[in-house]
Length: 589
Ligand code: NOJ
Image 1 (cartoon, protein in one colour):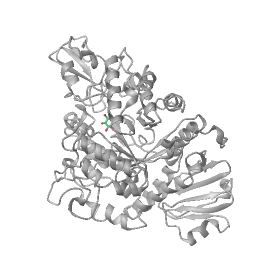
Image 2 (spheres, rainbow, N blue to C red):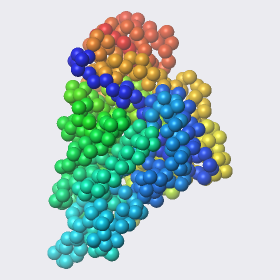
Image 3 (cartoon, helix red, strand yellow):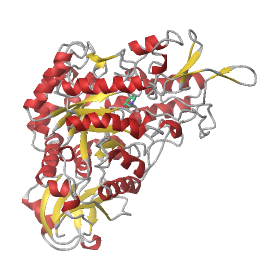
Image 4 (cartoon, helix red, strand yellow):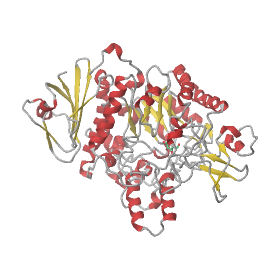
Protein backbone atom coordinates (compact mmCIF):
# COMPACT_ATOMS: atom_id res chain seq x y z
CA UNK A 1 0.00 0.00 0.00
CA UNK A 2 1.32 3.47 -0.83
CA UNK A 3 2.12 5.66 2.17
CA UNK A 4 0.66 9.14 2.55
CA UNK A 5 3.04 11.52 0.80
CA UNK A 6 3.62 13.37 4.07
CA UNK A 7 5.51 10.30 5.32
CA UNK A 8 7.91 10.22 2.39
CA UNK A 9 11.35 11.72 2.80
CA UNK A 10 12.60 13.14 -0.48
CA UNK A 11 16.33 13.44 -1.14
CA UNK A 12 18.56 14.24 -4.13
CA UNK A 13 20.49 11.01 -3.68
CA UNK A 14 17.28 9.01 -3.98
CA UNK A 15 16.42 10.65 -7.29
CA UNK A 16 19.94 10.16 -8.73
CA UNK A 17 21.48 7.31 -10.66
CA UNK A 18 25.14 6.34 -10.66
CA UNK A 19 27.65 5.25 -13.31
CA UNK A 20 30.57 3.19 -12.03
CA UNK A 21 34.04 3.51 -13.53
CA UNK A 22 36.77 0.96 -13.06
CA UNK A 23 39.73 3.05 -14.18
CA UNK A 24 42.13 0.37 -15.48
CA UNK A 25 39.64 -0.67 -18.16
CA UNK A 26 37.73 2.48 -19.00
CA UNK A 27 39.80 4.49 -21.49
CA UNK A 28 43.54 4.76 -22.03
CA UNK A 29 44.63 8.26 -23.06
CA UNK A 30 48.43 7.78 -23.18
CA UNK A 31 48.80 4.40 -24.89
CA UNK A 32 50.39 2.54 -22.00
CA UNK A 33 47.64 -0.10 -22.22
CA UNK A 34 46.02 0.95 -18.93
CA UNK A 35 42.98 3.19 -18.57
CA UNK A 36 43.50 6.53 -16.84
CA UNK A 37 41.79 9.62 -15.48
CA UNK A 38 42.36 11.86 -18.53
CA UNK A 39 40.69 9.04 -20.49
CA UNK A 40 37.65 9.32 -18.22
CA UNK A 41 37.56 13.10 -18.61
CA UNK A 42 37.49 12.63 -22.41
CA UNK A 43 34.30 10.55 -22.10
CA UNK A 44 32.26 12.69 -19.73
CA UNK A 45 29.76 13.71 -22.40
CA UNK A 46 29.15 10.05 -23.23
CA UNK A 47 28.40 9.43 -19.54
CA UNK A 48 26.25 12.53 -19.18
CA UNK A 49 24.19 11.61 -22.25
CA UNK A 50 23.38 8.28 -20.68
CA UNK A 51 21.30 10.26 -18.20
CA UNK A 52 23.15 9.46 -14.98
CA UNK A 53 23.76 12.03 -12.26
CA UNK A 54 26.76 10.67 -10.41
CA UNK A 55 30.07 9.08 -11.41
CA UNK A 56 31.71 6.64 -9.00
CA UNK A 57 35.42 6.29 -9.52
CA UNK A 58 36.84 3.00 -8.23
CA UNK A 59 40.14 3.22 -6.32
CA UNK A 60 42.70 5.27 -8.21
CA UNK A 61 45.07 5.96 -5.35
CA UNK A 62 48.71 4.96 -5.17
CA UNK A 63 48.86 1.19 -4.89
CA UNK A 64 51.04 -1.83 -5.66
CA UNK A 65 47.90 -3.13 -7.48
CA UNK A 66 47.89 -6.57 -5.89
CA UNK A 67 44.10 -6.24 -5.81
CA UNK A 68 43.63 -3.62 -8.53
CA UNK A 69 43.84 -0.61 -6.24
CA UNK A 70 41.90 -2.05 -3.29
CA UNK A 71 45.33 -2.20 -1.67
CA UNK A 72 46.14 1.47 -1.05
CA UNK A 73 49.62 2.62 -0.12
CA UNK A 74 48.82 6.34 0.00
CA UNK A 75 45.30 7.79 0.29
CA UNK A 76 46.48 11.23 -0.71
CA UNK A 77 48.14 10.44 -4.06
CA UNK A 78 46.93 8.97 -7.33
CA UNK A 79 48.55 5.91 -8.93
CA UNK A 80 51.02 7.08 -11.58
CA UNK A 81 49.41 4.92 -14.28
CA UNK A 82 46.07 6.65 -13.68
CA UNK A 83 47.31 10.25 -13.44
CA UNK A 84 47.65 12.83 -10.69
CA UNK A 85 45.59 14.53 -8.01
CA UNK A 86 45.31 17.46 -10.46
CA UNK A 87 43.68 15.05 -12.95
CA UNK A 88 41.12 14.06 -10.32
CA UNK A 89 40.46 17.75 -9.74
CA UNK A 90 39.83 18.13 -13.47
CA UNK A 91 37.51 15.14 -13.35
CA UNK A 92 35.56 16.66 -10.47
CA UNK A 93 35.34 19.94 -12.34
CA UNK A 94 34.28 18.19 -15.57
CA UNK A 95 31.52 16.36 -13.70
CA UNK A 96 30.34 19.50 -11.93
CA UNK A 97 30.27 21.51 -15.16
CA UNK A 98 27.89 18.92 -16.56
CA UNK A 99 25.71 18.87 -13.47
CA UNK A 100 27.08 15.51 -12.31
CA UNK A 101 28.70 14.56 -9.03
CA UNK A 102 31.78 12.45 -8.33
CA UNK A 103 32.19 9.70 -5.75
CA UNK A 104 35.53 8.36 -4.58
CA UNK A 105 36.06 4.82 -3.31
CA UNK A 106 36.85 4.68 0.39
CA UNK A 107 38.83 1.54 1.20
CA UNK A 108 39.50 1.61 4.91
CA UNK A 109 38.95 -1.90 6.22
CA UNK A 110 42.52 -2.57 5.15
CA UNK A 111 45.48 -0.87 3.50
CA UNK A 112 48.30 -2.17 1.36
CA UNK A 113 51.22 -3.75 3.21
CA UNK A 114 53.23 -1.04 1.45
CA UNK A 115 51.41 1.74 3.28
CA UNK A 116 53.73 3.63 5.59
CA UNK A 117 51.46 2.81 8.57
CA UNK A 118 51.95 -0.90 8.03
CA UNK A 119 55.66 -0.61 7.31
CA UNK A 120 56.01 1.05 10.71
CA UNK A 121 53.61 -1.36 12.36
CA UNK A 122 55.61 -4.43 11.40
CA UNK A 123 58.90 -2.90 12.49
CA UNK A 124 58.59 -3.75 16.19
CA UNK A 125 56.04 -4.57 18.85
CA UNK A 126 56.54 -1.20 20.46
CA UNK A 127 56.35 0.91 17.31
CA UNK A 128 53.76 3.67 17.66
CA UNK A 129 51.85 2.19 14.67
CA UNK A 130 51.81 -1.38 16.04
CA UNK A 131 48.19 -1.00 17.18
CA UNK A 132 47.01 0.33 13.85
CA UNK A 133 46.67 -3.24 12.61
CA UNK A 134 45.46 -6.49 14.15
CA UNK A 135 48.40 -8.46 15.57
CA UNK A 136 48.03 -11.66 17.59
CA UNK A 137 50.37 -14.29 19.00
CA UNK A 138 50.40 -17.80 17.53
CA UNK A 139 48.47 -20.76 18.90
CA UNK A 140 50.14 -24.17 19.14
CA UNK A 141 48.45 -27.47 18.43
CA UNK A 142 48.90 -30.70 20.40
CA UNK A 143 52.00 -31.57 18.40
CA UNK A 144 53.46 -28.19 19.21
CA UNK A 145 53.05 -26.82 15.66
CA UNK A 146 52.51 -23.13 15.27
CA UNK A 147 48.95 -22.22 14.13
CA UNK A 148 47.18 -18.97 13.30
CA UNK A 149 45.20 -17.28 16.12
CA UNK A 150 41.92 -18.60 14.70
CA UNK A 151 40.48 -20.56 11.77
CA UNK A 152 39.13 -17.68 9.66
CA UNK A 153 39.49 -18.05 5.91
CA UNK A 154 40.70 -15.20 3.73
CA UNK A 155 38.39 -14.06 0.92
CA UNK A 156 41.26 -14.85 -1.42
CA UNK A 157 41.93 -18.45 -0.19
CA UNK A 158 43.79 -19.91 2.80
CA UNK A 159 44.12 -18.59 6.33
CA UNK A 160 43.26 -14.95 7.03
CA UNK A 161 46.41 -14.64 9.18
CA UNK A 162 49.98 -14.13 8.07
CA UNK A 163 52.98 -14.96 10.22
CA UNK A 164 55.55 -12.21 10.59
CA UNK A 165 59.00 -13.67 11.27
CA UNK A 166 60.49 -10.39 12.37
CA UNK A 167 58.11 -9.63 15.25
CA UNK A 168 56.94 -13.22 15.81
CA UNK A 169 53.21 -12.52 15.58
CA UNK A 170 50.42 -12.98 13.06
CA UNK A 171 48.54 -10.13 11.41
CA UNK A 172 44.98 -10.32 10.12
CA UNK A 173 44.18 -9.93 6.41
CA UNK A 174 40.61 -10.74 5.42
CA UNK A 175 41.72 -10.33 1.78
CA UNK A 176 45.19 -10.83 0.27
CA UNK A 177 48.30 -11.20 2.44
CA UNK A 178 49.28 -7.79 1.10
CA UNK A 179 46.05 -6.24 2.47
CA UNK A 180 46.42 -6.09 6.27
CA UNK A 181 43.24 -5.15 8.19
CA UNK A 182 43.25 -1.86 10.08
CA UNK A 183 42.44 -1.95 13.78
CA UNK A 184 39.44 0.34 14.14
CA UNK A 185 39.42 -0.11 17.93
CA UNK A 186 42.44 2.18 18.00
CA UNK A 187 41.22 5.82 17.99
CA UNK A 188 44.06 7.24 15.81
CA UNK A 189 42.91 4.92 12.98
CA UNK A 190 39.44 6.41 13.06
CA UNK A 191 40.91 9.90 13.20
CA UNK A 192 43.11 9.15 10.16
CA UNK A 193 40.08 7.88 8.19
CA UNK A 194 38.11 11.01 9.07
CA UNK A 195 40.98 13.12 7.73
CA UNK A 196 40.98 11.19 4.43
CA UNK A 197 37.22 11.68 4.11
CA UNK A 198 37.53 15.42 4.68
CA UNK A 199 40.49 15.73 2.31
CA UNK A 200 38.54 14.41 -0.68
CA UNK A 201 35.33 16.22 0.22
CA UNK A 202 37.32 19.45 0.47
CA UNK A 203 38.69 18.73 -3.00
CA UNK A 204 35.11 18.76 -4.25
CA UNK A 205 34.29 15.05 -4.27
CA UNK A 206 30.60 14.54 -3.52
CA UNK A 207 30.69 11.36 -1.50
CA UNK A 208 31.96 7.80 -1.25
CA UNK A 209 31.39 4.21 -2.07
CA UNK A 210 32.74 2.41 0.99
CA UNK A 211 34.54 -0.86 0.50
CA UNK A 212 33.45 -3.76 2.79
CA UNK A 213 32.48 -1.13 5.31
CA UNK A 214 30.60 -3.64 7.46
CA UNK A 215 33.84 -5.49 8.28
CA UNK A 216 35.52 -2.66 10.20
CA UNK A 217 34.37 -3.75 13.67
CA UNK A 218 35.54 -7.21 14.69
CA UNK A 219 34.58 -9.27 17.71
CA UNK A 220 37.65 -8.64 19.86
CA UNK A 221 37.70 -12.19 21.16
CA UNK A 222 38.53 -13.34 17.60
CA UNK A 223 36.84 -16.70 18.14
CA UNK A 224 37.10 -19.69 15.82
CA UNK A 225 34.33 -19.76 13.24
CA UNK A 226 31.90 -22.70 13.15
CA UNK A 227 32.93 -25.39 10.67
CA UNK A 228 30.76 -25.14 7.57
CA UNK A 229 33.10 -26.70 5.04
CA UNK A 230 34.61 -29.87 6.51
CA UNK A 231 37.10 -30.18 3.64
CA UNK A 232 39.32 -27.36 4.86
CA UNK A 233 40.64 -26.02 8.17
CA UNK A 234 39.75 -22.44 7.10
CA UNK A 235 36.20 -21.27 7.73
CA UNK A 236 34.11 -18.18 7.12
CA UNK A 237 34.37 -15.94 10.18
CA UNK A 238 31.78 -13.41 9.02
CA UNK A 239 29.71 -14.05 12.13
CA UNK A 240 32.47 -12.29 14.05
CA UNK A 241 33.38 -9.47 11.71
CA UNK A 242 30.42 -8.66 9.41
CA UNK A 243 28.32 -5.98 11.16
CA UNK A 244 30.40 -6.37 14.30
CA UNK A 245 29.75 -4.87 17.74
CA UNK A 246 30.90 -1.28 17.13
CA UNK A 247 29.96 -0.87 13.45
CA UNK A 248 27.22 1.71 13.98
CA UNK A 249 29.36 3.80 16.30
CA UNK A 250 32.08 3.91 13.63
CA UNK A 251 29.61 4.63 10.84
CA UNK A 252 28.14 7.50 12.81
CA UNK A 253 31.64 8.96 13.14
CA UNK A 254 31.96 9.07 9.36
CA UNK A 255 28.27 9.89 8.90
CA UNK A 256 28.63 13.12 10.86
CA UNK A 257 31.18 14.37 8.35
CA UNK A 258 29.09 13.21 5.39
CA UNK A 259 26.05 15.01 6.76
CA UNK A 260 28.08 18.18 7.23
CA UNK A 261 28.93 18.12 3.49
CA UNK A 262 25.55 16.74 2.33
CA UNK A 263 27.58 13.95 0.71
CA UNK A 264 26.42 10.73 -0.96
CA UNK A 265 27.29 7.36 0.56
CA UNK A 266 26.84 3.75 -0.39
CA UNK A 267 28.39 1.02 1.71
CA UNK A 268 29.38 -2.38 0.46
CA UNK A 269 28.01 -4.97 2.93
CA UNK A 270 28.71 -8.60 2.12
CA UNK A 271 27.11 -11.40 4.18
CA UNK A 272 24.38 -9.38 5.90
CA UNK A 273 20.88 -10.70 5.35
CA UNK A 274 19.18 -9.16 8.36
CA UNK A 275 16.99 -6.31 7.11
CA UNK A 276 16.74 -4.72 10.56
CA UNK A 277 20.50 -4.66 10.92
CA UNK A 278 20.88 -2.92 7.55
CA UNK A 279 18.14 -0.49 8.49
CA UNK A 280 20.21 0.59 11.49
CA UNK A 281 22.75 1.89 8.96
CA UNK A 282 20.46 3.36 6.31
CA UNK A 283 17.26 4.58 7.97
CA UNK A 284 16.69 8.21 7.00
CA UNK A 285 17.19 9.58 10.50
CA UNK A 286 20.29 7.50 11.35
CA UNK A 287 22.83 9.64 9.47
CA UNK A 288 25.21 6.72 8.94
CA UNK A 289 25.08 5.91 5.22
CA UNK A 290 22.44 6.41 2.54
CA UNK A 291 22.25 2.85 1.20
CA UNK A 292 24.15 -0.42 0.96
CA UNK A 293 25.12 -2.96 -1.67
CA UNK A 294 23.43 -6.21 -0.86
CA UNK A 295 24.85 -9.54 -2.02
CA UNK A 296 22.08 -12.13 -1.94
CA UNK A 297 21.09 -11.68 -5.58
CA UNK A 298 24.64 -11.79 -6.92
CA UNK A 299 25.50 -14.82 -4.76
CA UNK A 300 22.51 -16.62 -6.24
CA UNK A 301 24.56 -18.89 -8.53
CA UNK A 302 27.27 -19.79 -6.02
CA UNK A 303 27.90 -23.37 -4.96
CA UNK A 304 27.22 -24.56 -1.41
CA UNK A 305 30.72 -23.77 -0.12
CA UNK A 306 32.38 -21.69 -2.76
CA UNK A 307 31.45 -19.27 -5.51
CA UNK A 308 33.48 -21.25 -8.04
CA UNK A 309 31.33 -24.33 -7.54
CA UNK A 310 28.29 -24.81 -9.74
CA UNK A 311 25.07 -23.41 -8.29
CA UNK A 312 21.53 -23.09 -9.56
CA UNK A 313 18.62 -20.73 -8.96
CA UNK A 314 15.08 -19.95 -10.05
CA UNK A 315 13.46 -16.69 -11.09
CA UNK A 316 11.25 -16.86 -8.00
CA UNK A 317 14.41 -16.78 -5.82
CA UNK A 318 15.43 -13.53 -7.45
CA UNK A 319 11.92 -12.09 -7.14
CA UNK A 320 11.71 -13.01 -3.51
CA UNK A 321 15.06 -11.32 -2.75
CA UNK A 322 13.89 -8.08 -4.33
CA UNK A 323 10.45 -8.23 -2.77
CA UNK A 324 11.87 -8.55 0.73
CA UNK A 325 14.23 -5.60 0.43
CA UNK A 326 11.93 -3.42 -1.64
CA UNK A 327 9.01 -3.65 0.74
CA UNK A 328 11.06 -3.52 3.91
CA UNK A 329 12.97 -0.37 3.01
CA UNK A 330 9.85 1.36 1.70
CA UNK A 331 7.89 0.56 4.85
CA UNK A 332 10.68 1.45 7.25
CA UNK A 333 12.11 4.65 5.80
CA UNK A 334 15.27 3.02 4.54
CA UNK A 335 16.72 2.99 1.03
CA UNK A 336 18.13 0.46 -1.46
CA UNK A 337 21.02 0.52 -3.91
CA UNK A 338 20.05 -1.30 -7.14
CA UNK A 339 22.69 -3.13 -9.14
CA UNK A 340 23.23 -6.14 -11.37
CA UNK A 341 26.91 -5.59 -12.13
CA UNK A 342 30.11 -4.13 -10.81
CA UNK A 343 33.85 -4.84 -11.02
CA UNK A 344 33.47 -7.93 -8.80
CA UNK A 345 30.68 -9.53 -10.79
CA UNK A 346 30.26 -11.17 -14.18
CA UNK A 347 28.14 -9.51 -16.84
CA UNK A 348 24.42 -9.55 -16.04
CA UNK A 349 23.15 -10.86 -19.38
CA UNK A 350 25.22 -13.99 -18.81
CA UNK A 351 24.47 -14.38 -15.13
CA UNK A 352 20.77 -13.60 -15.01
CA UNK A 353 19.55 -14.80 -18.40
CA UNK A 354 20.27 -17.66 -20.80
CA UNK A 355 20.13 -15.29 -23.77
CA UNK A 356 21.63 -16.56 -27.00
CA UNK A 357 23.63 -13.96 -28.88
CA UNK A 358 20.66 -12.96 -31.04
CA UNK A 359 18.80 -11.90 -27.88
CA UNK A 360 21.70 -10.00 -26.31
CA UNK A 361 20.11 -6.59 -26.88
CA UNK A 362 16.63 -7.69 -25.88
CA UNK A 363 17.90 -9.29 -22.68
CA UNK A 364 20.11 -6.30 -21.79
CA UNK A 365 17.18 -3.92 -22.19
CA UNK A 366 14.87 -6.16 -20.18
CA UNK A 367 17.36 -6.30 -17.29
CA UNK A 368 17.74 -2.51 -17.37
CA UNK A 369 13.97 -2.08 -17.10
CA UNK A 370 13.44 -4.53 -14.26
CA UNK A 371 16.29 -3.11 -12.19
CA UNK A 372 16.13 0.64 -12.62
CA UNK A 373 12.41 1.09 -12.05
CA UNK A 374 12.46 -0.53 -8.63
CA UNK A 375 12.63 1.54 -5.47
CA UNK A 376 16.24 2.59 -4.91
CA UNK A 377 19.20 4.31 -6.50
CA UNK A 378 20.26 2.50 -9.71
CA UNK A 379 23.92 1.81 -10.47
CA UNK A 380 25.14 1.17 -14.02
CA UNK A 381 28.58 -0.41 -14.38
CA UNK A 382 30.79 0.58 -17.32
CA UNK A 383 29.95 -1.49 -20.39
CA UNK A 384 26.60 -2.61 -18.96
CA UNK A 385 25.01 0.22 -20.94
CA UNK A 386 26.40 -1.49 -24.07
CA UNK A 387 25.27 -4.96 -23.10
CA UNK A 388 28.85 -6.21 -22.76
CA UNK A 389 29.11 -9.93 -22.05
CA UNK A 390 31.44 -12.35 -20.24
CA UNK A 391 34.84 -13.32 -21.60
CA UNK A 392 34.80 -15.90 -24.41
CA UNK A 393 34.51 -19.57 -23.40
CA UNK A 394 37.69 -20.42 -25.29
CA UNK A 395 39.92 -17.90 -23.51
CA UNK A 396 43.06 -19.45 -22.06
CA UNK A 397 43.79 -19.15 -18.32
CA UNK A 398 46.59 -16.73 -19.24
CA UNK A 399 43.89 -14.17 -20.12
CA UNK A 400 42.57 -14.18 -16.55
CA UNK A 401 44.20 -11.56 -14.33
CA UNK A 402 42.21 -11.40 -11.11
CA UNK A 403 43.83 -12.46 -7.83
CA UNK A 404 40.59 -14.03 -6.60
CA UNK A 405 40.31 -16.32 -9.61
CA UNK A 406 44.03 -17.04 -9.97
CA UNK A 407 44.49 -17.90 -6.29
CA UNK A 408 41.61 -20.35 -6.62
CA UNK A 409 43.14 -21.88 -9.74
CA UNK A 410 46.63 -22.23 -8.27
CA UNK A 411 45.29 -23.76 -5.10
CA UNK A 412 43.30 -26.28 -7.11
CA UNK A 413 46.36 -27.17 -9.19
CA UNK A 414 48.43 -27.60 -6.03
CA UNK A 415 45.87 -29.74 -4.20
CA UNK A 416 44.47 -31.76 -7.10
CA UNK A 417 47.14 -31.66 -9.82
CA UNK A 418 45.72 -34.65 -11.73
CA UNK A 419 41.99 -34.11 -11.30
CA UNK A 420 41.20 -33.02 -14.83
CA UNK A 421 37.46 -33.14 -14.18
CA UNK A 422 37.80 -30.66 -11.28
CA UNK A 423 39.97 -28.44 -13.50
CA UNK A 424 37.34 -28.52 -16.22
CA UNK A 425 34.53 -27.57 -13.85
CA UNK A 426 36.58 -24.77 -12.33
CA UNK A 427 37.38 -23.38 -15.79
CA UNK A 428 33.68 -23.39 -16.67
CA UNK A 429 32.83 -21.59 -13.44
CA UNK A 430 35.57 -18.94 -13.98
CA UNK A 431 34.04 -18.11 -17.34
CA UNK A 432 30.71 -17.68 -15.56
CA UNK A 433 31.72 -15.94 -12.35
CA UNK A 434 35.29 -14.68 -12.32
CA UNK A 435 35.66 -10.98 -11.67
CA UNK A 436 37.65 -10.86 -14.91
CA UNK A 437 34.35 -11.01 -16.79
CA UNK A 438 33.49 -7.50 -15.68
CA UNK A 439 37.01 -6.18 -16.14
CA UNK A 440 37.68 -6.41 -19.87
CA UNK A 441 38.26 -2.98 -21.44
CA UNK A 442 35.29 -0.88 -22.50
CA UNK A 443 34.54 -1.38 -26.18
CA UNK A 444 34.59 2.12 -27.62
CA UNK A 445 34.67 1.39 -31.35
CA UNK A 446 35.40 -1.22 -34.00
CA UNK A 447 39.03 -0.03 -34.22
CA UNK A 448 41.82 -2.38 -33.05
CA UNK A 449 41.66 -2.98 -29.28
CA UNK A 450 38.10 -1.70 -29.42
CA UNK A 451 39.46 1.85 -29.34
CA UNK A 452 40.31 1.37 -25.65
CA UNK A 453 43.99 1.99 -26.29
CA UNK A 454 46.25 2.57 -29.32
CA UNK A 455 46.16 0.05 -32.19
CA UNK A 456 49.69 -1.23 -31.57
CA UNK A 457 49.48 -1.38 -27.81
CA UNK A 458 48.94 -4.55 -25.81
CA UNK A 459 46.20 -3.66 -23.34
CA UNK A 460 46.76 -4.86 -19.76
CA UNK A 461 43.80 -7.19 -20.33
CA UNK A 462 42.52 -8.34 -23.71
CA UNK A 463 39.44 -6.72 -25.16
CA UNK A 464 36.48 -9.04 -25.67
CA UNK A 465 36.72 -9.95 -29.39
CA UNK A 466 33.06 -9.11 -29.96
CA UNK A 467 34.00 -5.40 -29.92
CA UNK A 468 33.73 -5.22 -33.70
CA UNK A 469 29.97 -5.72 -33.40
CA UNK A 470 29.32 -4.35 -29.95
CA UNK A 471 30.82 -0.96 -29.22
CA UNK A 472 29.94 2.51 -27.99
CA UNK A 473 30.46 4.31 -31.28
CA UNK A 474 27.92 2.11 -33.07
CA UNK A 475 25.46 2.27 -30.19
CA UNK A 476 25.55 6.04 -29.81
CA UNK A 477 24.52 6.27 -33.49
CA UNK A 478 21.77 3.67 -33.22
CA UNK A 479 18.58 4.91 -31.51
CA UNK A 480 17.55 1.27 -30.87
CA UNK A 481 20.75 0.42 -28.99
CA UNK A 482 21.09 -0.75 -25.40
CA UNK A 483 22.90 2.54 -24.65
CA UNK A 484 19.92 4.65 -25.75
CA UNK A 485 17.52 2.31 -24.05
CA UNK A 486 19.31 2.80 -20.71
CA UNK A 487 19.00 6.53 -21.19
CA UNK A 488 15.24 6.10 -21.83
CA UNK A 489 14.81 4.04 -18.67
CA UNK A 490 16.70 6.55 -16.55
CA UNK A 491 14.79 9.38 -18.23
CA UNK A 492 11.47 7.68 -17.51
CA UNK A 493 12.45 7.23 -13.87
CA UNK A 494 13.08 10.98 -13.68
CA UNK A 495 9.96 11.97 -15.58
CA UNK A 496 7.69 9.94 -13.31
CA UNK A 497 9.83 10.25 -10.21
CA UNK A 498 6.88 10.31 -7.83
CA UNK A 499 6.05 6.79 -8.96
CA UNK A 500 9.48 5.29 -9.65
CA UNK A 501 11.48 6.97 -6.90
CA UNK A 502 8.90 7.47 -4.18
CA UNK A 503 6.23 4.89 -4.96
CA UNK A 504 5.57 1.58 -3.19
CA UNK A 505 6.47 -1.82 -4.64
CA UNK A 506 4.13 -4.75 -5.14
CA UNK A 507 5.23 -7.96 -6.76
CA UNK A 508 2.70 -9.27 -9.29
CA UNK A 509 2.25 -12.89 -10.38
CA UNK A 510 4.61 -14.09 -7.65
CA UNK A 511 4.86 -17.78 -8.55
CA UNK A 512 5.54 -17.29 -12.27
CA UNK A 513 8.99 -18.66 -13.18
CA UNK A 514 9.05 -16.92 -16.56
CA UNK A 515 7.67 -13.45 -15.91
CA UNK A 516 8.97 -10.74 -13.57
CA UNK A 517 6.22 -8.19 -12.92
CA UNK A 518 5.68 -5.53 -10.30
CA UNK A 519 3.74 -2.33 -9.77
CA UNK A 520 4.85 0.98 -8.29
CA UNK A 521 2.30 3.38 -6.88
CA UNK A 522 2.41 6.92 -5.48
CA UNK A 523 -0.94 8.32 -4.29
CA UNK A 524 -3.26 7.40 -7.17
CA UNK A 525 -0.54 7.17 -9.83
CA UNK A 526 0.44 3.63 -10.66
CA UNK A 527 2.74 1.88 -13.12
CA UNK A 528 3.21 -1.74 -14.12
CA UNK A 529 6.63 -3.11 -15.04
CA UNK A 530 6.32 -6.42 -16.84
CA UNK A 531 9.13 -8.56 -18.23
CA UNK A 532 9.37 -11.81 -20.12
CA UNK A 533 12.46 -13.56 -18.68
CA UNK A 534 12.60 -16.18 -21.44
CA UNK A 535 13.40 -16.60 -25.12
CA UNK A 536 9.86 -17.71 -25.82
CA UNK A 537 6.81 -15.69 -26.72
CA UNK A 538 4.56 -15.78 -23.65
CA UNK A 539 0.93 -15.00 -23.07
CA UNK A 540 0.05 -13.02 -19.95
CA UNK A 541 -3.36 -12.10 -18.60
CA UNK A 542 -3.37 -8.65 -16.96
CA UNK A 543 -6.88 -8.89 -15.52
CA UNK A 544 -6.15 -12.25 -13.91
CA UNK A 545 -3.21 -10.53 -12.21
CA UNK A 546 -5.21 -7.59 -10.91
CA UNK A 547 -4.10 -5.10 -13.57
CA UNK A 548 -6.86 -2.90 -14.91
CA UNK A 549 -7.27 0.11 -17.11
CA UNK A 550 -4.03 0.44 -19.04
CA UNK A 551 -3.76 4.15 -19.75
CA UNK A 552 -0.49 4.45 -21.60
CA UNK A 553 2.49 2.30 -22.52
CA UNK A 554 5.42 4.53 -21.58
CA UNK A 555 8.32 2.24 -22.44
CA UNK A 556 8.84 -0.93 -24.41
CA UNK A 557 12.06 -2.77 -25.12
CA UNK A 558 10.97 -3.47 -28.70
CA UNK A 559 10.35 0.21 -29.52
CA UNK A 560 7.43 2.49 -28.86
CA UNK A 561 5.56 2.36 -32.16
CA UNK A 562 1.79 2.90 -32.12
CA UNK A 563 1.29 -0.77 -32.95
CA UNK A 564 3.04 -1.60 -29.69
CA UNK A 565 0.63 0.61 -27.78
CA UNK A 566 -2.31 -1.19 -29.30
CA UNK A 567 -0.99 -4.58 -28.27
CA UNK A 568 -1.46 -3.58 -24.64
CA UNK A 569 -4.16 -0.95 -24.67
CA UNK A 570 -6.44 -2.42 -27.30
CA UNK A 571 -8.60 -4.26 -24.77
CA UNK A 572 -9.17 -7.98 -24.93
CA UNK A 573 -7.67 -10.68 -22.78
CA UNK A 574 -4.15 -11.93 -23.09
CA UNK A 575 -1.02 -9.93 -23.80
CA UNK A 576 1.59 -11.56 -25.94
CA UNK A 577 5.16 -10.82 -24.84
CA UNK A 578 8.04 -11.36 -27.25
CA UNK A 579 11.36 -12.97 -26.13
CA UNK A 580 12.85 -10.93 -23.27
CA UNK A 581 10.35 -8.18 -23.91
CA UNK A 582 9.74 -5.69 -21.11
CA UNK A 583 6.97 -3.15 -21.05
CA UNK A 584 6.12 -0.30 -18.69
CA UNK A 585 2.55 0.97 -18.57
CA UNK A 586 0.63 3.52 -16.54
CA UNK A 587 -2.38 1.72 -15.17
CA UNK A 588 -5.45 2.46 -13.12
CA UNK A 589 -4.70 2.71 -9.40
C1 NOJ B 1 35.44 -5.35 -2.35
C2 NOJ B 1 35.94 -4.79 -3.63
O1 NOJ B 1 34.85 -4.44 -4.43
C3 NOJ B 1 36.84 -5.84 -4.24
O2 NOJ B 1 37.17 -5.55 -5.57
C4 NOJ B 1 38.03 -5.99 -3.37
O3 NOJ B 1 38.82 -7.06 -3.82
C5 NOJ B 1 37.65 -6.26 -1.92
N1 NOJ B 1 36.55 -5.49 -1.46
C6 NOJ B 1 38.80 -5.97 -1.01
O4 NOJ B 1 39.02 -4.59 -0.95
